Amino acid sequence: MNHFDQESIVYGVIRHSPSTREVIAQNERRTNWAALQSLPLGVDDDWSLLCREMFAMPGQHLLNGTYQTQIIHFAASYRAVEYEWETWLRQFESLLKSMFWVSATVHLETELSGKHTFSWQADRGHIPSDAELRMSCEWEREAGFAF
Image 1: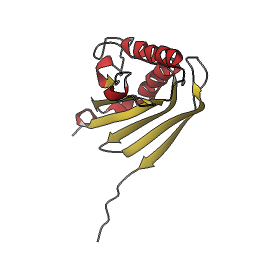
Image 2: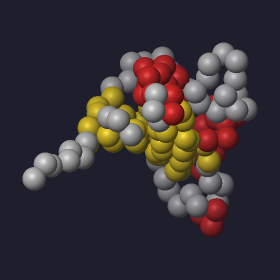
Image 3: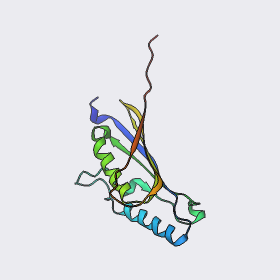
């Protein structure tokens, strides 16, 4: 099996606790929605690894899934995305820079190199800007034991 036959699964969540003032909260949620809408439909010719279809966002109303925290979730299946992981992360951070959020978590599951969890935190909340983002990574790998 060559490395292009390997499947990689990427999934996660972006969390935002918007302002308690309803008008400001709606504006922040609209900004996040617009950032997702700016992504291409499907993987495009410019080698975009993120696409609009992989993201979902509940409505703004309590009964539509947004109590206080806005939850934007995403998932995709790729062919050996770990070989392009730096590009994927760069594109994801570019998306984060255009959004309001307090934390983001990405899970990468690969056949060869195990599971990785990438996390971003913005304790005071990130506002759209080109400010540097800080990411941490945890790696989990199951090892077989010979008896």
